[in-house]
Structure formats: C-alpha cells, structure tokens
Image 1 (cartoon, helix red, strand yellow):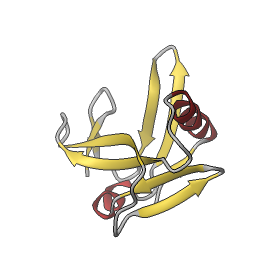
Image 2 (cartoon, helix red, strand yellow):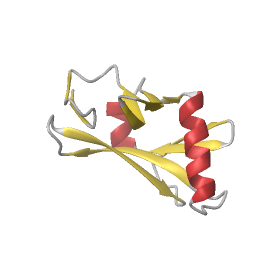
Image 3 (cartoon, helix red, strand yellow):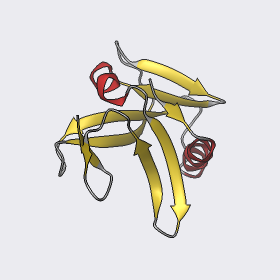
Length: 108
C-alpha cells in the first residue's frame, strides 16, 4: 500500500486537531480521473470505512484507501513539504510514468 513520512504524519495529526476532527476520523487517500496527466490525487478526512477499503495506521494516524485507488498508489510515499518551493502534501509514486508540473496529477 502506501507509506507516510514523519512530516506528513505530523501534519495530518495537526490538521485533524486544529479542524476539530474526532479520533474516529482518518485521512482518506484516493485517485480520481482528471487533471493534466489523466489521474489526480485526492485527500480528505472521513469517518466511514467502506467495504473493500485498505486501512493502515501509522503511530495513531489512520490512512484509508479505496480498492480501486490501491492499484495506482501501491508503493507510494505520502510526504509533506514546507520549504520555499511550496507547501503541501506530495506523492512520491513509483507507478507514475508521467506527472504534471504541479505534481497533482499523473499517468500510469
């Protein structure tokens, strides 16, 4: 499935706390069609695990991915960057054959 870096875990935890989400909530990571390269990453907070979802917990931070998205995200690392080149979550996806310049969409 996917892995989450320490920086990303800390940011997810901080966002959940500052946004008032309960411990029942988790980060849902997915893939949708669209974007410059054909597929785009999707991040959202959710509290409902659906049939077929893959669930992974990283030191108190739960990440859930739907069955279809797992195929595109297998081996992907979710990271968080707060440097001068931009701030936000980044996906290091070994399955991507092409990405757009903003890093929000990809193709396989």
